[in-house]
Image (tube, helix red, strand yellow):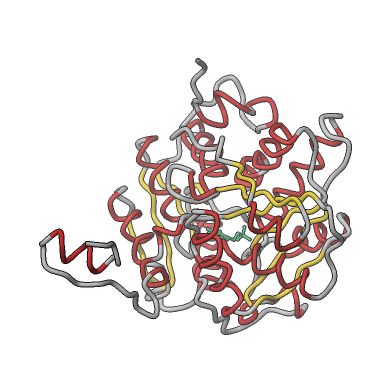
Amino acid sequence: MSTWNGLIDSGYRRWLPVTPGTPSVSLNEGNTPLLRSAHLSALTGCEVWLKVEGANPTGSFKDRGMTVAISRAAQAGAELAVCASTGNTSASAAAYAARAGLTAAVLVPRGRVALAKLGQAVRYGARVVEIDGTFDDCLRVARELADHHPIALVNSVGNELRLAGQRTVAYEIVDALGDAPDIHCLPVGNGGNITATWGGYRVYQQEGLSTRSPRMWGFQAAGAAPLVHGAPVAEPETAASAIRIGSPATWDGALDARDRSGGLIAAVTDAQIFEAYELVARRDGVFAEPASAAGIAGLLDQHARGNLPPGQRIVITLSGNGLKDQDASLRGGYTATETSAATSDVAHALGLAA
Ligand SMILES: *Cc1c(COP(=O)(O)O)cnc(C)c1O
């Protein structure tokens, strides 16, 4: 039996910007489940796979980049790792910093982060700075801090290490399926992940490890869709907080991935996102956070518009874990039957014959 020891030590060291002297700061991230979705395959007439990134150690794909960024920060002797975050980057930075014995400082937009993500950052021991403003303000401040102080900025902007780590998702998919899919769907916020995923497919094709690269289909929430409109959105609004970003830092990379792959970046409404969020939990048993469902919502939307040829092999990134957003999971309430503790009452409530 072989043991998985994370992206640097087990999987993809040769593709990562690390040297023999780089310590591996790892929580055994990566190697996430790739599940075939019978339901989505039947709905679309395609072969649909789900890459369950919520299975990463802190519950999102951010861990793929963070193992590289924090390993290199540790190697460089940094003491303070700083990031701006809509939640998941802060949880990941805080965890990997804790593992490395560094301090993490996370800048988050006050009142706009899912509480469980904040709870992660707090428990991992990060210094939490709540800023009166949007994510975009937090990122501006983080970059300005990095310009003037000796800190390690671990946002994906200006940190190619994060994107290099995030490329590994494409390597895992090709290694599992034997070649690249026809289409790769994913949510788009800051634009880093579509850029990195596309980059990973390109590396594998150039190295002869796959014969092709997929069309990249990225989806933004309709109230936070600057890449779709072609202009920043001053007040981005969506209940999918992980993609509530008005001014994507990796703007050019995202458009490049779209155009060079012959893909698209389109908008989906919050109603479509929540429908997909409920669908994938109920039909596939995968609990993903709302932002994560944007890729599914987008795929179904393109199918409804007649833009999806049948028979395609499709991979959808489910970017984060549903446990991170309790507001979303119990939104609209839930139904439960209350009974006494008598077995007969419970049997009756379940409609079981006496
Ligand atoms: C960060 C994040 C995204 C958006 O990824 P970008 O690289 O910012 O485009 C989507 N979903 C989840 C769960 C995330 O944490």
